[in-house]
Image 1 (cartoon, rainbow, N blue to C red):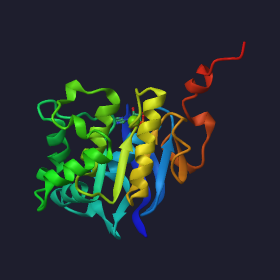
Image 2 (image 1 turned 180 degrees about the horizontal axis):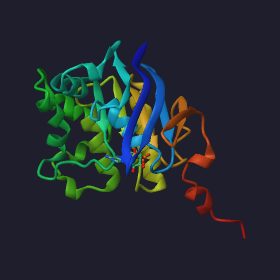
Image 3 (image 1 turned 90 degrees about the horizontal axis):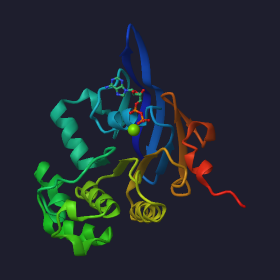
Length: 240
Ligand SMILES: Nc1ncnc2c1ncn2[C@@H]1O[C@H](COP(=O)(O)OP(=O)(O)O)[C@@H](O)[C@H]1O
Ligand SMILES: [Mg+2]
């Protein structure tokens, strides 16, 4: 079943006198069962694209349809409500609120959209799912980088989104922790949540059912090595 239908999505910025397209004419259909990875160099337009999908940045042209309705035809408040209830978005570099415990960080989206139900029960369940139940009463400053990512993932799942969107969720993590976080995304996908991940690294590509490459604002099918960060390839130790 179709979840999101993106057509001709474009974002232009002024560069001196000229216009340049950070995102140019992107078409993409996201299905309920998808786990999509988008790779591409820094500056290729990935975050701009995700921000438009999440209803946070007005496109210059094109549309983002959720259930057949263009979200940008809606009022600001209605877009926020959709974002809070249908999408789980983990923006690039997002962090947990330092004054709240892990448990309360996870519950936050529930209170933002004023829903009915057992938020404490759901938060406890999610902490268990992401493997950090024992850290519920800790504060973010007491956690490791990998543990913090788990908090952000649990928080994004709080309102049972149809689609979980994450922007470079494994950046700055070591290889082992990256693998654990990717396996976690795999389990979330298995349990029925569609996933859209953006990365500039290659080591996450074995996860997911579709890989796309973003280059100069354009999205194409498949992996194009010339369009990604090859530092990892270069850093592989050479045989003596
Ligand atoms: N608010 C903005 N104003 C002008 N240019 C921007 C703005 N936001 C992003 N850009 C430019 O758009 C391009 C794509 O940026 P971004 O989407 O952040 O790339 P990525 O996430 O792939 O690293 C970059 O050249 C960036 O400098
Ligand atoms: Mg980015």
